[in-house]
Each structure stands twice: as C-alpha cells, then as structure tokens.
Image (tube, rainbow, N blue to C red):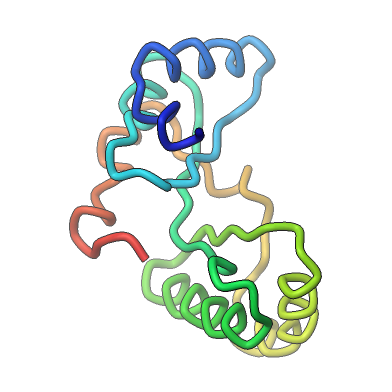
Length: 135
C-alpha cells in the first residue's frame, strides 16, 4: 500500500500538503524505487526524511543485529543513517542487546526530526540510492 502511494504524485501531494498544514514532516520508508516523495516534498515545501536501511525484514534477533551493524557502518561512512524496523519482540531484544555496542562506536541515536531534508535540499536527497543502491 505505502509503495503504491509514494509512487503516485497526486496522492503524495495531498498527503504532504495535509502534513504541512499540521507543521509535520514525512518519513519515506523507501520501499519503492518509483517514489516521488522527494520531488513532491520539494514542490509542497515540507521537510522529509528517507529510510536508508530496514533492520528487520528477517524477523530473527541475530539477523536484526547484523542489519544494525550494517546501519552503524553506513552512519560512520555517511555521517548519518536512518534505519527503521517494526515494533516486534525480536527487534526490541536486538536493539537492547546492542546498546553498549552502539554507544562504544560513538554513534548517537537521534530522532528522525534531527535528520530532515528541507525543501531546498530535496533535489539531491535520493542521490545516495542511485549511487550506492538501496540496502
């Protein structure tokens, strides 16, 4: 459902305009390479963010930890990364189990709102996906 919506310009314009009225932002999960979110967000003038990595496509604690480590490497390489997951017991256990490892790397866990792309930056927001491919 979300992939279909983010690929539809009219739908995203309506969604983003509504969010803008509430002084909100949009997080694109980037489940589709056909997403138009960045372009429409730029047109509408709303900040947004882009997922870099899903951590729990495989719903197993060890697999999630592997993904978290990949996210940490991505953050170190780029200076930041947005990783998302589901509210599941395995995801929570993996996160709690890695807190000390995350802290030791010096990586800060921050709200998505601190990593927003503002409209004047949105044109280049998806360049890393074209250059490196989705994770």
